[in-house]
Image 1: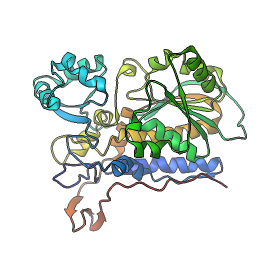
Image 2: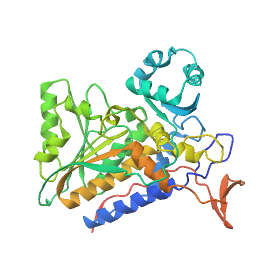
Image 3: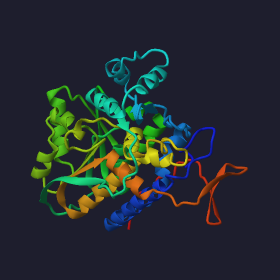
Image 4: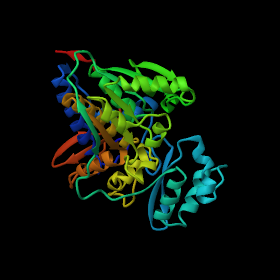
Length: 392
């Protein structure tokens, strides 16, 4: 809640139930780790706000906590646009005729207001921009992931599972950090020419990637691609967050590998899943949550959408991805889990609807929620103590 609302107003309680969804995923992790003889306690709600705690981020209403995403009013609704990568600014003239000089966001808002949301989103996606419509909270329970491929079983080995982490930013690295804490050996693989973007925030990068082995490969070379394929072929779990075509260009075919390697668990995290045409759409944690209905739910009391927490689809996806990986290892069957940021956030939006009758009141120390005669303080983001895997 502390990360949801306008900076000059109280935190909004409407989407506070997202924390309960995160706690449910954390409890699943605890149970699955216990089956492997590992005591693992994860504070799910704390994971939603730990980047904000490390970087000093706060709620900003229609501007994301991290500042790279905005909610913009179109002629017939709202859209979310994320300008995270340097190339995104260069695409603005092709999208709306806006030159990336001066206050690009202001010029962007003026152009967006003149056009329909569906047209804006369609054109942006063709250009590879992370733009999404502000959807309504789903009325039915959407699937948070699907099994896209299956392969042969194998007997469970005696040593710790080898996890190859090909992911970057937040969701995938959080997943593999949780697997490391559950006793896995994790090798983080980065391209020599394109390192993990989370390195721009050293404290957050360290939080997600401490304790992992690091391997940097030149994917442009035949030797680098061969080394990557060899490492993936020997893995128990692979976690990646690239669009399918990106790995295919490196000679990595997830479906084929799952079919060939007994017991291989493949976790594919993407913005909208591996099915076409969504497989080509770009998304980040903030705009994916908007597409899932969380912004509309969070701003229900204000009459307009606002960002829910900080890139909340990312940590939610990371928690669920780690649970899927442990569940897959327990089955012993080769599985390809197709997990999208939008779908994980949409399921959270469905279950996160807060009870009516609650109110937020200011106190001497901050804010509290008052509901049914009970009072509970709104807690600021914090970094929970990282548990160490303990074999029982």
